[in-house]
Length: 164
Image (cartoon, rainbow, N blue to C red):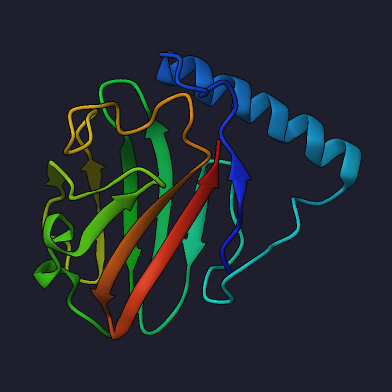
């Protein structure tokens, strides 16, 4: 199921990726200690549990895909890890199969940097900082961001969504 998660401190301001990661990690520990469990899942039933507010996992079809939002500044960047025991993942080019969607625009990745790995493949998926109209891809009015990955291991579409 898709989890709608908040990305702290991102309301269009440029922030340091390391600082975001540190703050989100600390907040996750505090919330976990207070509640005894992570946030409740919502939305699409094909996405599994999240490891942190910035990581989401989809275990549909014959492959598991974990996506971690790494940074916003300089363009959105995601760490993507794909795992399976059935499918050869080397044939999937996420530069061709992914897109980033906001209320204002849909954009294709600028890069997919992932070495071959057979059944276990990890890499970095990066998007440009600007939308096709020249404005910021993620600006002060952006409320949600969706990373869509199509056609991996028999699953027509996997959607990973974050609320800003």
